[in-house]
Length: 129
Image (tube, rainbow, N blue to C red; front, side, top):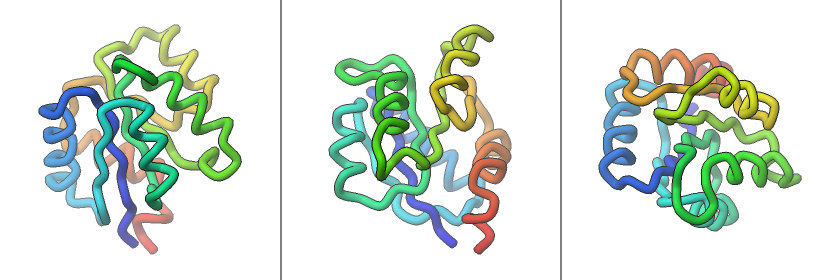
């Protein structure tokens, strides 16, 4: 079954790279939505059916950590998987994000194989239905 994806990153180029990497990873992806920050992401999440969120951390406005917190506090969105994709990845930072409910972390740059593996770990059942 195809899963809709939301890519949240303030860089249009990075969003394009992630979108292309999803295609190369040969996963059953439905629609791919894009947002420049957490504010746009939340607005989009209110209107669209999204199966997984791929978010950067450092963005203007609502950043990735705040987006993760808001998603986990939302009764409707709280179970939506969130994968953080960032260059910022110290062990304490990743531990903090895990405690907030992050499902997985990918360090930039990453390969299509790494993205595929993480997506299959998080969404395995949904991707095989």
